[in-house]
Length: 267
Ligand code: HPA
Image (cartoon, rainbow, N blue to C red; front, side, top):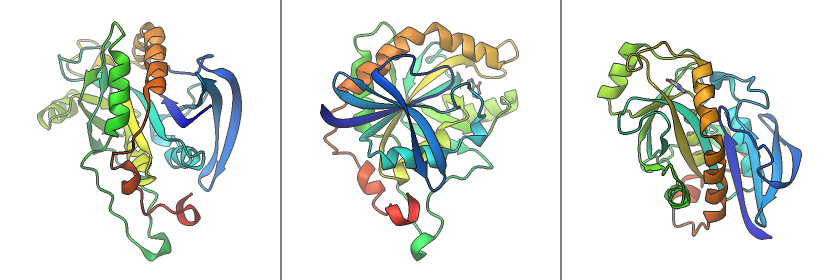
């Protein structure tokens, strides 16, 4: 079996659904809580699948235990994390149905625990976020998408709103002026914690709807689920091909971004 271990964090509407061979449920205990996920194998490669909102989509975005989730994947020593995130779109070049391998984010969350580093061990840590998403993992996804009918779009700026409500049209107007392309509710602090932990992390943002005020109709979670359901089979292919494509040379800055991580203090 290949030594490379890859984790998938499935967002809204994305579940393991027998994507892997030898699937079994495992629970990992961390200092932030226990995390249950599916472990399996794809083409000789160990893969972990975590449902971000729980099996039955019962955990809202602002209450996800992001620290436990990332800490569990760190404990499992995964080499890379590929996550999915349903988003509203503000950019007509990324219409609903698009898959965007985002490269930047803006954080508009308000009330979340956003770091592992709270002064433990007597030191203060400021992590570099010049390149928030792992370029090697992003490339693996983009290459995997070349053989599919819906090609992933390279680059986009994700704006993380606190939720769980959708945005107002005025907020969307502001986000657009600030350079946001897509809006969602989960990528922060998931991406920030992954980088603090020194893990390679990239996200496929799945545009399910035009954002509030751009869409002519009120937004609903059902609409998001319906759109996610449409592209389900192709998305699974993209995920699995991406997993297969990951051959990290680790020329990225991800592990050095996490150089202050220590098991005793943070794991
Ligand atoms: N806003 C925030 N999060 C979302 C949206 C949206 O319009 N669509 C899917 N997730």
